[in-house]
Length: 435
Image (cartoon, rainbow, N blue to C red; front, side, top):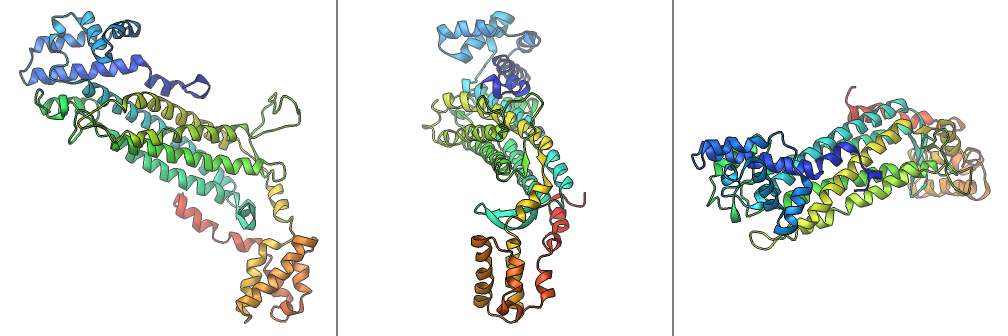
């Protein structure tokens, strides 16, 4: 992943040095288990740990791989150079490359999930804080992009919070799903290695033994993991799109924080563009781009092939690094988002009371007018507002068919904004509990 959209902790997780360190731990723990079983000498198992504090030479491993054309063999050769050929004689005993590669990949995905869960906690805290801040900040709700009925900005933040909270739960499940390891040998039969070795290695590395593997860990687990990342990315875009709409010049109910010295356009000095939100929309596309390849990786030939390997070498780092960056960027955006309550009210009043049309419709039906006639009366007056710029309340008060069913006081009552916010507390309790 390019540095522009990367953060150090997640990048370090996918660094070759980190990968080789995990490979070493798998091999060393496996040797311990083999020694416990009496398969290899205890002295050889202990000798492997001499490399515990050694920094593996990535360039040297690459040099060996250029000859062997096999990354795991290149690593094992380098490990033997460090601890001695005789001491390394029993390393990788009864194992196959996928035992190391798949278990390592799952460890990296588990650790990536832990970083992403922390990211989501920060985002949830930011969304909750802004929801509480603007709990009763009234703005117009829109359907099809058209004014509908009043909502509050707090409700907007609250629904994004609820969505991200669901995503956090999904990610926890995805983390559990991916937290398995396999040390089952060629084609997964344990013919040349005792299942106790797998149990020992997994326990040491925080994994569960894969119930049944072939020569690889089943890829439906990975498909579920990357699909979850894709859903989270879509939720990020959902929030970003709302901010982009709110920042449109004709709307301007909120905008991204514009720092001192920031420039919006190389040509037009007046511009203040929603660049972070637009960037998040693009990053979401890249995370979702990993989902279909992960799904296609599920179907492998017989007990294994390596058609999944090149895919995962790319989507593992790219999807997790990109999502980590996007979650952090969105958190900062939400924390600093500038809200304009006065503009929200002005926008809502732009069409002079039309947003209260449903209340009038319902009042007419309650007064004994048929729904068809009620709809006709309300729409007839509403169209005058749309087409001629009239005032909706005044038109209703001047309509004899309306006033025959509703008194002046009853019509006036239908324009009370508080009516639309009376259940905000109930919704907040559903989302946030009693906090």
